[in-house]
Length: 629
Image (cartoon, rainbow, N blue to C red):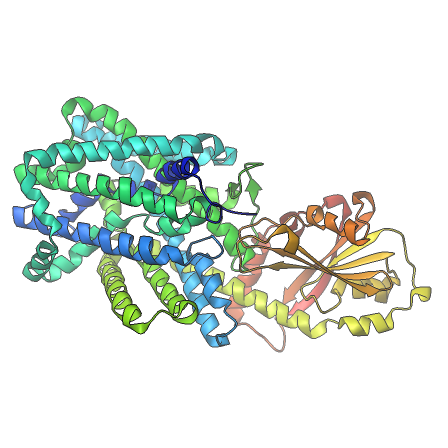
């Protein structure tokens, strides 16, 4: 299956992808002007909106966008696609599966990937809450009478958004691009309107103002980076979504539409503050003419809903990747489109995310309060992405050190400064996303280690295929007609279920398939590479069925190709045998007791392997076994 990133695009198609990218990729960063400037001059930073401070803060925002987004993501990181797919887990898979690296380094990369995914989920709870609340708070500019209604309205919008997820985004997705294009035009016009009245604000384009601000305020300037980070909200999406839209449409949308609109709006808010410092109460909405206030609130709310939708869809995709890469328990995944690849719905993730978002809205109550807690998760993910890309540059790309050293010293210094500054928010609420990420990291690392422990114990008790073939005496076995498919973890060994059937029942079907399902480090496996079949004799076949980490397994459908190899797979005469392990402690523990108990608890919440693999309920048999870890 090809992706948008690998298909050549005509001019018309490229324009369509660029428009679509505006809706899906740039929703988060596109709505950041709603709250960024206000937070930069809040009680959190303690910086007053004097002319010098306004210019200094605008300069910091400008160069953060240019260095982090334009230089790092658009120019460097987007080159690091994994067969057309991006995101921290795709990057982890690309780096960690390099056969030339040591096992120890591979584990380091896996730990970094898990940490990045966990931090991403922490960000997924804060982004919808801060975006929707900040949009609805525009009503307060019209009259304080709306203040008691802000939180209820925001909750209604958020509950409605999560409630419709099971319908899929295909229908409303077509509206995302045009709505966000209108939004960016509005950002541009609002900014230009103020800049024309106070063009001196454009002096902030010089990095000298950022440097002077930092030298003048020192510690306060460092703290202010935590607020400047809000302007980078959603920057990781540029990389994560390259598989859906391709590099060039995303780059084009950023350079031609998004970046100019964002800078114009930030500078417009700055121009307003130069004229009226009291406008800091809500500079985004106060920059608009009074007659446009209510329509602007409506459009802003629609834009924040779209931004939240992108976050929710990203959480679904991350859950699918983590499941197939063996980093989290199996989750029930529903495909919401018969024609569009990647449109999925994960009920467990959806409802847990909604509960978390509601909890954050009720706990913090306002957009600025959430902003004071925002940043740790997103900057942590950014820092991890930079480290993994640096490993890729050195291992695979072999860039000359004269380029690598200054470039990555700059990127790591900026990412490190942003992350460190945001850690200062820990007491103010920054502990919330960090606590969520920590819990998820422990769970994912435990699941990863637990699966490896189970695999090690299974490896100890399996029978090599050569030994099995030597013991098979067809004349002494009952061989019913039909095909039996035994799922086994190891492609070079017999399935435990088959050994049980032979030992206890003396049964060997006329056709036996020893099936191993493998997940590749590629996002999608080509149809020609899906099945690998080796005939073993006596009606036995070894089959490897491969999937990419962005695909949903459908074993019963995909093994239909075995019919072309002479193996009948008639649905009415094919049985599937899967193992159901009873995992207990043992004399030779492979995991600490707390981790084993946590792994067992997570296993109880995992979706049925039959459902996850797409096996028919009426033709699937689960055979139990005992494994000590």
